[in-house]
Amino acid sequence: MEGLGEPVAYTVLPDGVPVYDRNRVLVGEVEHVLADEGPDIFHGLIVRTPDGHGFADREQIAELHRRGVLLTVPGTDLRAPSADPVAADADRPAGEQLQEGLRRAWDWLSQPR
Image (spheres, rainbow, N blue to C red):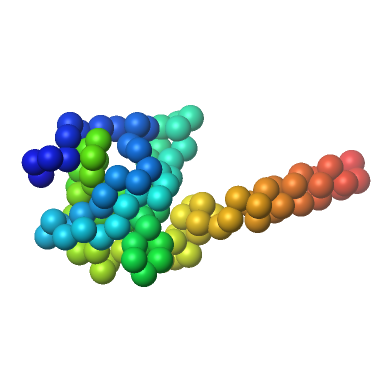
């Protein structure tokens, strides 16, 4: 799609770029890239839409560009982030994630050895 700029890797895709469905209709914008950069695994995107957040897994993404993302599906096919364990965790507030991580660390530290 002309005007989206050069193709980019998920590692440099900026948050806030527009996301278009397979019919070139604006769906929303990138809220967050879900990936594990250590082993270089791209999981998908959290997309902010007018109706809330949606999740596009890597199979639903056709192209990543500096100024936009193209999906392989209609925007209505995006699932709720809660439907995917990785996306659901990323969609929770940061404070909630921190609290759960601290609780798990405390549980591990307080176990008898």
